[in-house]
Length: 285
Image (cartoon, one colour):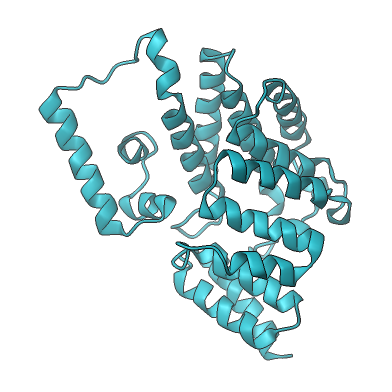
């Protein structure tokens, strides 16, 4: 997967390392080992036979998902979004869905990417400042991508049990259906995250689940879940999410410490500017 992200996605080693939540030297060693294995074993670059496509599918889906994520929220460069990278992931997702029409997870991944991409026009304001989902102008969301994404989500969900990409698409669909942020069905999103944690438990899934719990049961309950997550101390979004919940819980000093840690880890200048604004707001209180 790491080598595919490098050769197909064109991602740099630091970007891939952040995607896998590993140190850059560790990722560089993986790339070297992968290239050596291909060379020494004489592995050919070719499309596998039909009966082998299905066993390769999880790795392909994960690779496209990570390419899209780097396009949706860039870890390097000056912009928050790399539209050409997100667009390429969607193009490849469409190709995969056509290639394997009876598999639900390619549909789920394509739906997820379209629903996420539909918001790109509202994620940064006219002055280049990042806008959180709850504050976005939803009239700027791409209605065509939303309609297609919702239909694909319905098609993918016909297969039971749903896979991780179908569940994530269902979560994105709940945001897309809400005309206003306050209309979001957070109890349903929380239940979907419970299911996703059962299907594909990971620290990042647990972090997102904790945010959903906070939206349903209050920031202190969300913080209690975040503080039990292990393995994400070097993950910027854990600290920014924690800072947001601490701010909402009326604990400005702790919130500032969490935002400062997030700022230490942030690499995107738009995100850094947002975190600096949060710290400035807390300092003026």
